[in-house]
Length: 195
Image (tube, rainbow, N blue to C red; front, side, top):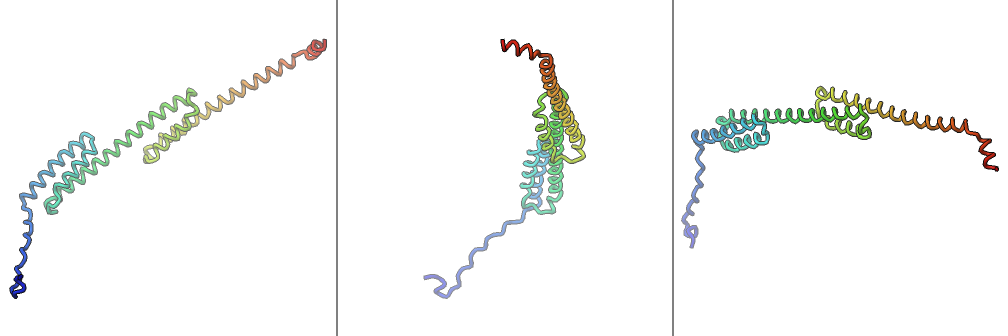
């Protein structure tokens, strides 16, 4: 028999104890650990290891999960500042590298265009440089795009001059043949063949 069958009230279930609110000391310990992670993030930023900046910033953020907002507001602001600085520095570094590669390729292509080397490749390579620069802001790529046009002009002029020289050689050869035909003794040849 159960106690409810006897008319006795059922015992009340034990109340789950609510977790105690974290103390200022516990919050401060979390903030201190997160601040340490941010020192690593700053060090990574100075060393230009931007992937580590993000990892350390995320670890700092994870350490203050559950910390009351009033305790972590400054830390959150600092995490955001470090992430923003890392993102901007990384983007600037990538842009500088891209512009350097494009400049090097253009230097090589100009040399080829002026010397007549790899003329069949120059147009294609110039297109690739332009594609590489597609995402670069206009003011930063204007000089490079101008140089692309100049190199294309030099390469086109060289190719035209090469075609003209080939045409001149062909015409010279044809004129030489015509001159020799003009001086050819057809009558003498006919007599020689008939005898």
